[in-house]
Image (cartoon, rainbow, N blue to C red; front, side, top):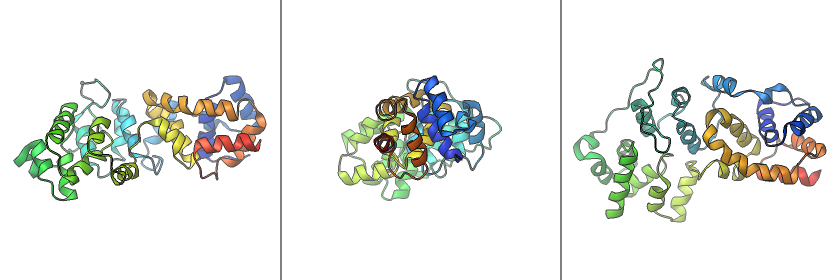
Length: 281
């Protein structure tokens, strides 16, 4: 059977949650080629090409990669940040993202790195003052782009607790993937607010992405690359999916064969895909 690179990567991730003997036998049964065994170094090299970043990935994926504080991985992320001024500024300044880390993480010199302009409102009013002056979405984003370090986020959290920041500022801060969960929670729990945060691709962690997002083949492809891109967090996704693989697929060749037939066109989540394949088999 012929598999696209995406299908092969997705199957490879799931097979990686089984033991080596089962994985070897299932590969032979479903005819899975070596593309799914691509190693971490080759994945990272492939992702350095500007067209290779998987489409429609959640914003939180960027944070999981940045939390590695790896200059080479940061160079990959730099290519895909688009208009996220806050993260571009943080990367340009070498701000670390890993919990408890303080050592700067400079980008490789080969990159044409230029920090975005400092907003005039920040120059005039300071960090919290600029956020309080935000009366448009553009002003909110500009002010939020200057919130960079844990100390900045703490200052913002305390300022909002003392007197609520304007809605535009709260919104611009809440959709930053690096916004601390406690700070985001303090901005409100209204269903409309929660919906906007979800639409922005802000997730609790890789386990939520693995179980509740689709289509399954795209999610699993990203998780397969996660072993190279965010190894410190990929274990959360593996731990969430592994029990499902054991329960619904196990070492049953027929169940894996059904999964291989479904994976490329299945529109549901990975949780639903694995359960469906097991039920059909």
